[in-house]
Length: 155
Image (tube, rainbow, N blue to C red; front, side, top):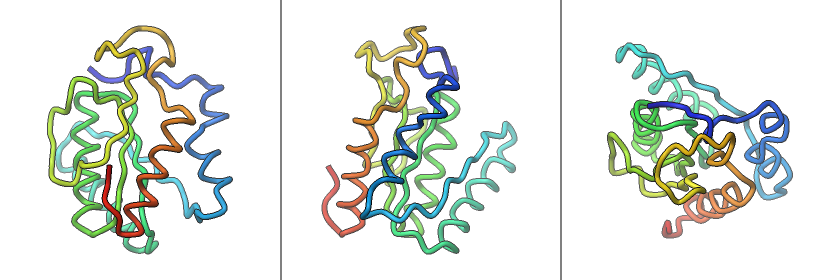
């Protein structure tokens, strides 16, 4: 499990990343930054990175976070842990990931997830970029996050 062709982001996708482009242009959002976090094999390192993201978000005093995980399976352990760490700190969070099969782990903070399964097959399709983040996904996630930040109900 992990990142297959349908979840691979091509170089062109990175240059035109809809997550950054749409948020950057939204006049009602102050993009504080982008944190890129790896997925260590060692659990001690894994959860150290999770905690550091929570500390960073606290220190920056952000109003909310969009978290994106490329891939599925073991990457969802990190994804779930990051959402939990932010949720415990009362930081509104919306996640974007390929979740068609569900998650290998879940927690109470994983309430708002945008599923990137575009094929509807709930599996890796081997079509390059088919199940990556799109502008529609970002707009939907941003709407959810704004609602959460204003104290509204999710979903």
